[in-house]
Amino acid sequence: MNPKFLEFKENLKEQTNEEKKSGKLIILSGISGSGKSIIGDLLVNEHNYAYINKYVTRNFREEEIEAVKQGKPIGIRPVVGKYNEADDKTKKQAFLNLRLPLSYINYDNYYGFSKEDIDNYLKNGRDAVIIVNDIALIHDLKNLYGENSFACYVHRFNPKNKDIFMEIAKQRGDTSESAEKRYQKAIKDFDRYTNNISLYDYTILNTENGIQKLSQMLQNLNNMNTKKVQQEKTIKQRSTPKIYVFIGNPGSGKDKALETIRVQSFLHSIIMPKHTTRKRKENDGEEMICPEDELFDMNSCDLTYDNYGNTYGINTQELDERLKDGVSSSLIVSKPKAIRKLQTKYPDELVTIFIHGLSKEEYMIQQKDYLDDKYVKKHLAEYEQADEFYYTDWLDFNHVIIDNGDSTDVKLQIDNIMKYYEEGRDWSIAKIDNYLKVANSYAEKYKRDIANEIPTKEEVL
Image (cartoon, rainbow, N blue to C red; front, side, top):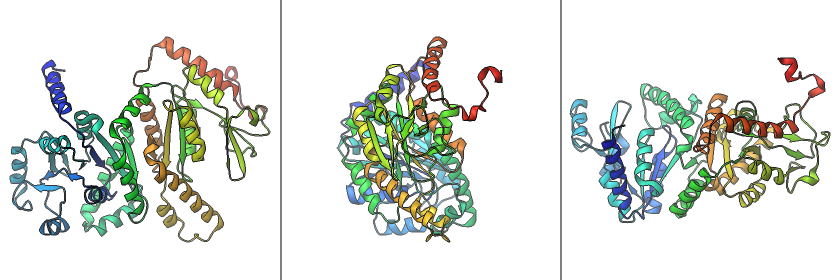
């Protein structure tokens, strides 16, 4: 890369960092209909955030024109006239004449922000919110504003649930053609989240009807100490190896996550078994040590919790040994109390990951003819339990994996998370060979030989 360009980029960043930026910049991103504008409005109206105005070449929507007439802030500015009343060629040239350094193209329209506008708010201690759906621009904003910026991905519905998506588009006044374009764009936008999950500091699950939960989440976001949070994130990223803990609502994809780690992620993490008093199920792997197993020993577990009448236990001494030997571990933990104990003991090593599948609302739509069924009611109660844990402690989750039904997407999100925490890992052959030797010694201890029908490695070869 050109040395002069690198020097220019560094000078630009230093110039920004030299300014007093006691204000924080919240960057909102998400597919169409996820609720970005609602969240932006809540931050502006309830927490005195400033909207960073977005210069656009698209025509203003009817509701935006009405809001402008009423003097309400809408976060967008025309480049020609009051509501962008001009042909596309004129509007696009007017946009280019603004020479905005923070710009992108979306739906064949131009969008951009003034760096000066952002700087003026932050250096004067004013918090600001910006809505961006372009990965490259989010990278630029985070590079420029560092610990004062937080990128939040907003999620509401599964992007592959087309019926619900189209209904939302219809409610906002889109034509069938524009709704279809938005739907196709939503799929692509979600793919970008899948491939850039570690870019986002937080994920806002906007899955509750009404704004009560959302308002509380934003209150928590507004009260956080930005510098302390970013410093903790930096420490956690640099501290290796890791303990990856997964929690989620029913059918969220926890089992998919373990299968991915078991089969495809041995280089990065191995399963940490839990002891349990329940009987072994047919689909249990080495992640469960049941009473009928030779290694079952609940007395060896110094961290236990109860779930649905059964006790689960974790031997943290083995976790300590794995960390000392440079081996990362993955496990599912179902109870908040147990996770908090792990967070206390492993503040720098523990990575908490909430897995979100269908929302409660989507599940109810899916099961609308069976809502009185005992099994469905039990699942709804589990949804409420998991959702309550998420909404209470959402800022404590390091990542949120969104399972849209595609196992490949779950795998990509796990891959990106683990690569994020392995940024400085030594990938020399000697180091990796030693790692595999140690990891295999742990995994071998919990190997299952079902009815002696599984062939040995020598027999396979």
